[in-house]
Image (cartoon, rainbow, N blue to C red; front, side):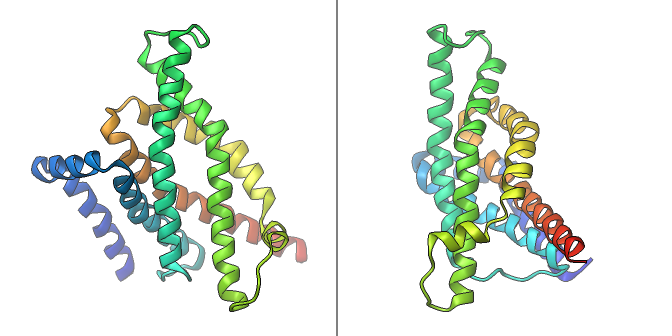
Length: 223
């Protein structure tokens, strides 16, 4: 185990301790509950960045901060604010649809959680992935081109659509995120955004796997 492995694990453990100790947990939830958007920003900015760092470790075999780390933290914070709003929209919308007979099982909390998760992950989820992917590509090009103009065509050409559509949309959305967010939506509402932020660590891991797979396929095709 490298030194960075231990530091990263200790960081995740620190989060766990904050949430397991009643005094710190209650204080943290009270603050983030009073300021939901700021809370969503903070949770995702920290935990999702930890996921990015894990992804770098998997891709390159060592720990290092990705270029534009500050921008990436900002992007993840914005995603956290989007998630904070979308949870309310999709769960509230699913509840209204059940109550009005447009969705079945109006008295089932499990059905509500599934419908909220399903609708979110086939609409908002893919677009959130596009936003996160293209934001990352923009940051990469910003440092590569050193101040030169970046066009939308460059970003489109640079993106690996095979991994985005074939892996992220068609595999992770239905088989991973819908089940996981169903479990998240069964939790009390004050814990949902935090639980989703922890899932962003998994997202960073999966992005690294997708990039590694894509890189290996390119190497094989070139050979």
